[in-house]
Image 1 (tube, one colour):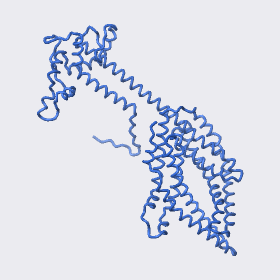
Image 2 (cartoon, helix red, strand yellow; image 1 turned 30 degrees about the vertical axis):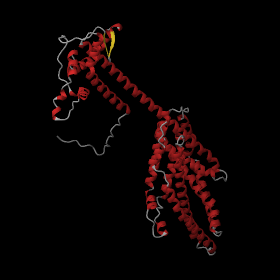
Image 3 (cartoon, helix red, strand yellow; image 1 turned 90 degrees about the vertical axis):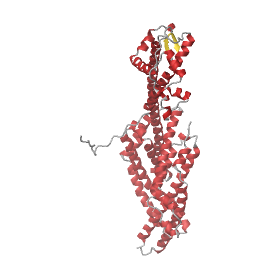
Image 4 (cartoon, helix red, strand yellow; image 1 turned 180 degrees about the vertical axis):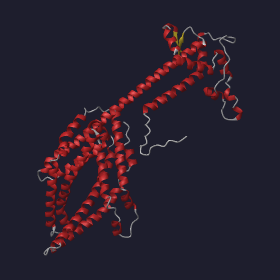
Length: 514
């Protein structure tokens, strides 16, 4: 027989997940099987009590009495436990299939055989004769016999067996109704959670996008640089929110539209980011020259930065006239407005779903930050070097900017779920403050790295001029000041990184049960 080989080009199918409703049905059927076994194990005692209550308990010689058949030991574990018999041990093997004399006499009086009774019960339960007999009996002929329903005039074993069949049918019907109801309830709850996720995601994205659109007029006209800053921040927050709720919003807008919106926001943030970086440089240049005590060469730096800003601002305005920005500002808000429903009530189920989504998203973002920051962790935890120069030289400058982006993303993710954790502000506020500090310290260091490169580049350009001596000296002094501030910022980065949020502590702090 030749073994079949799977095609390596065909992706392996993932096993289908086991739904909660299936697990509940299996548990319910297991409980029913246990109840049936327990019912037959105790049936003889129930029947004896009923006959004693009616005064019709027959003695020896009753024609209905049949000798008990072979008894499965598994059905009478309770009797063995009560009589002190045990399974293990060679001396007890023979006794495990025997019953106490009290139970044997009781079975002889009632004529009950467990093996035959189980087989007859199964046949009657499958045929449904017990249900038919119960339906034809009048109400005054019925009485409750333990968990059985039997005609009042019947005391034979056959009628009692029919009562067990009826009980089995009723139990099976009830179980199926319960399983069907549990499945439908789970489905309705899942739909409510999905609808709430669409509502929350559309609300958050709409709010950030509206704030971004509101900054565009001020960013293009006027001298207030805060409009440019707020526009870039709003674009980044909107992009992070689209990623957090990409699944629910993809059901309404379409996955392609969500990806298109994220690309458009990325391009808009990059376009306005070039203007923002030059604004920061121009705003800090005066304070930097004052700290260095330098005036020569500062005018050259400012003039070149103003020219670069005009070029970046022209590119930004041109990008605002593109079809992608028009689609973001005109079409996407309408699509999101259709996805936003009325504010749902404070349902504990929906609140729990929001918190679970927030815990997972925040933990994932913090875990990504820790993974990206492993080089920084190794630098922070390394033994003290022999010189400060060696420690500065070993700083992982290449991944530092990427670590800052991960910290910013984790911060925006945590801030997006602040409304869901309104009863636990301490853990979330502490995490947001820690992430903001990491972002700020690495950002200050990264700015000074760029400033130093800019100053050195301008110094090289003017070094060929005949009368550039004073400006060149001033630029070198300014570059030295920026280099000192850059190196001092490394220890601030290390201090902020040591206090970064941990996934385990953050999950424990956000583990709320309302």
